[in-house]
Length: 195
Ligand code: HEC
Image (cartoon, rainbow, N blue to C red):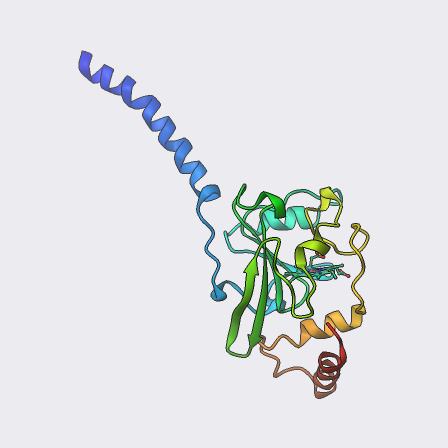
């Protein structure tokens, strides 16, 4: 009897720490990002003009920050896109303090899926030689490097219409339903936009 009680008392704090560990596990689990992590931009969740997802299963947390009028820190696993081939993914806390744990990606997209052209932190450039970090770091701190409009970044030389057309023309999406007129406009924009 005595020893059972002692075993119970010993086991109690252990099971509590076990619980605490189990609760910590999802947040600290490494986030694996491969070309399979990316998909048709329009299958992500639209927030104003851009799209979000969360590859760690916490879309709710990502949407909470994206929709907050006062900003915040995006949770690990957040995926953010404006163009089909440029992506920001939030890594584990402390992974890359300089970029506030954002990893930048430049993809090639085709009807067969995505391939990663470049990935990294402060040194990734898009195909026009623009450094992702150098622009996105201009956003005021409360916006966690998300530029949008009015967050402090220099504006992109591209119209809202062209952005929407590029989103509509994502080759990974099932674009068969798109009217010919739209497909032609998208093609014109892709060919003649210097971005
Ligand atoms: C010339 C500066 C510049 C460069 C270079 C640049 N961006 Fe951006 N990016 C912006 C601006 C400004 C916006 C907001 C555009 C808007 O909503 O009108 C933006 C939007 C985005 C968004 C949507 C969320 C947001 O911040 O509004 C993502 C994701 C993104 N860029 C990723 C990248 C990645 C990845 C690279 C590099 C491969 C990159 N960008 C290079 C300036 C830049």
